[in-house]
Figure (cartoon, rainbow, N blue to C red):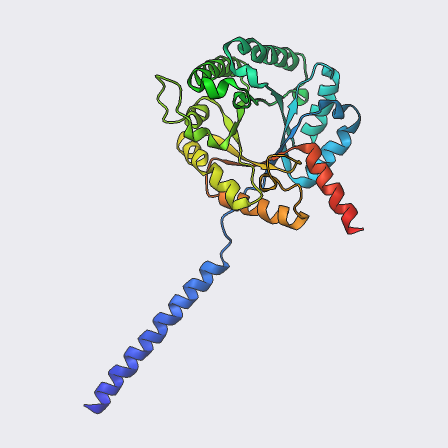
Length: 308
């Protein structure tokens, strides 16, 4: 009987050892497996379009080094179509998509609809007269009526006019077969959508009616940038749309916690990667949108000079 009990004990112990070893092996395999791919694509806003006259090579080279795949380039009357064509072609050759950028706070008002249409009309004529590699591949509207006093007094009415304008612009962009995106504040998910529309928030309405949005989730923490964009990412996951998480590098009087202006290069890189990792859990995540090109260049230049 003693030998039988001992044999049972040995068998049970052996099974336990095998089970523990199996669990350890499984955990090791899971640890060694590559984690989900992190989307590190980046976009940037280039507000001073006059720079493309003399700095096209520098802008394109910088974009290549920084992983920029999309440039939102402001359309300015002072810049000629030929200057835009040369720049767009140079960027296109390096795999960088260029989107026309325009907008003013009062474009959200009913009387501002025509200004948005002027941009789209110019874009249509420009693209029709351009070679394939010279064409803009999208358009972004940066309309921020909440910086004007009327927003506080008549927010509901401004939302009605803003959404009505967006519908007209989206329809025209669709006619041109041109993707349209919008830059929006992170708190737009707390604003009710237009009356009579099937949207529980204005952010959902924006996502439903555009191809992509860039959320201005400006903080000096990658985790906070993600948290401020999370609701929009979830909404876009459901709707099959795209979301850029915004990142601020410029100097701002609104508070140091909104920007990486005074942060070290390593902090900036670490937090950008953190936001990208968290964002990559969403099918809608398009990458980080860095505000803005000139601030980014200044940041890199300052870091190089500090290391000397």
